[in-house]
Amino acid sequence: MTTIVPGSSTQALAAELAAELDVALTVPSYDRFADGETLAAIPEFDDNEAVIVASTATNDAHVEILQLQDAAREAGAKSVTTVIPYLGYARQDKSFKPGQPVSVRATARAISTGTDRVLLVEPHEPAVAEFFTVSTDIVGAADRLAGALVGLSDPLFVAPDEGAVELATTTRDAYGEGTVDYFEKERDYETGEIELTPSDAPVDGRDVVVVDDIIATGGTMSGAIEVLDDRGADRVFAVCVHPVLAEAALTKLSAAGVERVVGTDTLERAVSEVSVAPAIAPLLAD
Ligand code: R5P
Image (tube, rainbow, N blue to C red; front, top):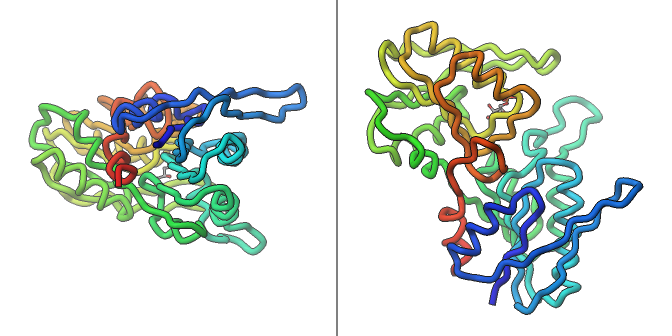
């Protein structure tokens, strides 16, 4: 039998997944010592298989996932599966300048030591799965975003860069109607500034859904919204799998004129309207 073990920042998704699979959900404790160290523990565990569900959006979350893996073994789990709904550091998948680490490779190796299997939900690049040294599968979740979109008028699904075209297409397909297009994006890695070159797809009077994997600072998404707004789009929806929404990202999107922001529960935010549990569950049910 399986028990779901939630990370502290992924409790809603873990509960959804336990309900979806009809399996037990354990209640870990998450403590912090005076010196800043953390202690995540699993008080009870009666089953053979532990499924840890924990996003790694912060440095503390990386330590927590290692502690939960170790605690599960200590509590008697014979096998440990680690579901990482949002894989942090995935955008540092190369050494972009001399002396830089491949951060996600380093964290993937560490996480692999405590688990038999890993599931990654829509990682920034699928190739990061190769950095894990145990069996690793990718869960597609972009189709879940369509569930939050209803009554769109002549919709256009736009990827803010070429890398997100597949997500935009999957979301469009799940919605059932509309066209797909993408912008060219150049990011200056010194200043962080983004330049977006729109396509010439007509947007006048249409509902436009901008689909990305991550909204972090909101720079990419707000830039896209401004361009679409200038070109006469009716309503612009910002949808993403991982609503990181760092600092003033949400305000940036509002200031740019977004109609609505939609994200999934890979990260628990006010906009996490859609659960990815139904996408993960079939890969655990085998
Ligand atoms: C980049 O390739 C990603 O797909 C996202 O577009 C990017 O990470 C979003 O970051 P930000 O919100 O900081 O512009």
